[in-house]
Image 1 (cartoon, one colour):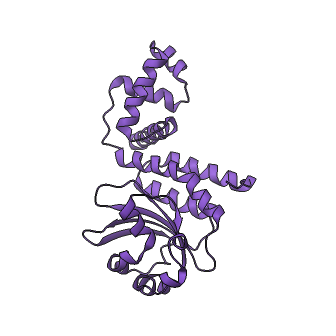
Image 2: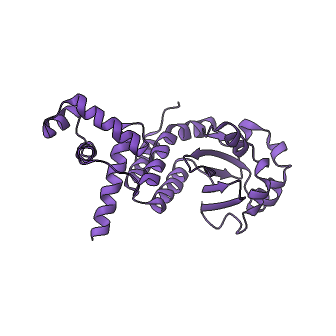
Image 3: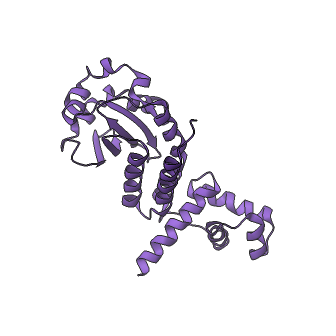
Length: 245
């Protein structure tokens, strides 16, 4: 991984902080699109939910004016898209450039390129997927006209993707999670930055018992790490406070 410049490091931290504060899907999507655009220069960022079986797609783009109103060319020609096809066939949603999979000469000869990319004046693309319900593919894309994305851009997306994955799972789980009172107690203290030992002292349980409660919480929230659970808790408490105003 290349070293980040000081300004880029600050931009990355600000992006992750905005993700942490996203209280609902709209705020999450806005944070993703604005944050990625600030990290990696591009003409367009978009958050897409594609349902291949019904050939439908919903897209949020920044700026919205770049994409044409009619995005049905994608659902007609989605098999022309090498990244989308790779994800569907393998389940691997890691960040990739179109040119990691095929040549631009080949891609620019497809129906998808001529009906969607060329009219939108976009050429180079890098994309990754996020967790989604069965039958849906969620992908986040960045597009440019002038030059292809560099290895450094790819590495930045690889760096931030685990945080986006955790945040997406938390947004999906919000309102559907049932934690017992002890798990809620543990999670609230995790959100305040307490260690397992400190939580155990407050709740009069052992650090090992705290860890067991956390493992159950991770399973229920669909996250893999402490930071993801803390982000989910912060999102929930923020939404509760907003609703009570």
